[in-house]
Length: 121
Image (tube, rainbow, N blue to C red; front, side, top):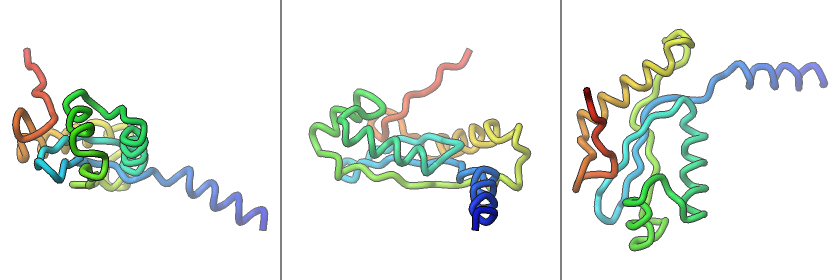
């Protein structure tokens, strides 16, 4: 029994969590925030915890949270990357590239969303 428990624990540690791109959507006004994470379940838990504390990711979301309440916000995974298909040292780059694809596609800026455009040099 102890060996089985050790095996399960090791398998868990060797299995990376799902990674990819998510959106947080305000169901009342349709605004979205697009982001990426190497740990999507952890990001979702963090987001829900921030909502409960009343301290979300940015001031604009905070204002909408105060106006519409936490039930107006929903976390959704847009796309994942399989850890087995990308070398571990490339995970961050792959997730960042996927996020850029979704930012380009959804354009969650200004009146459409909560993201801010990154400045380019």
